[in-house]
Amino acid sequence: MRLHVFLSGILVFIIGIVGTQFLPKMPGFEFLRGALTLGGALLICGFFMIRMPWHGIIGAGVVSLLGAAKGVMGLKDLPDFLGGDRSRGPAPLLEVGITVICVILLLRVLRVLSAERTRRMLEADNQRGG
Image (cartoon, rainbow, N blue to C red; front, top):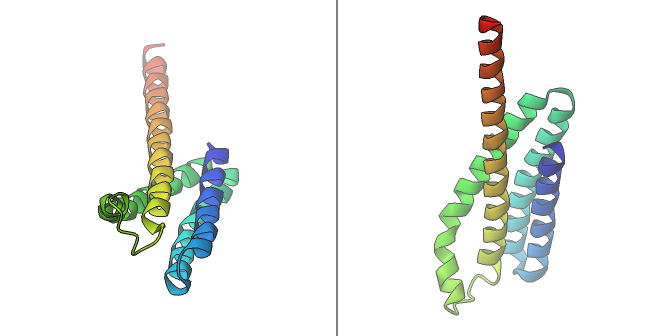
């Protein structure tokens, strides 16, 4: 799980850097700032997972939820982009990429937390009955 969080943070960094190459100067820097913030938060959660695994996992889930929510709000520009409106450049595609990364990470965190909850419930049941 830690590797997934680290890779997600690095991928968000890379998409932010790629955005500066293809977007105009000011929108590119704004896009980079957002990508560095989100990717940095994911990397910090990955570092937290080294010493406190559940704090890092829950933190990564919250950060990925915020990233996915922000990305879903930006999906309204994708149909215009696919329809031929290139006024924002490739920004809608880059935003969709970051949104997909965040959604996948969020689903993975939810699966890990659900498995841990099930494990703890079974463990408590075994202790009571055993």
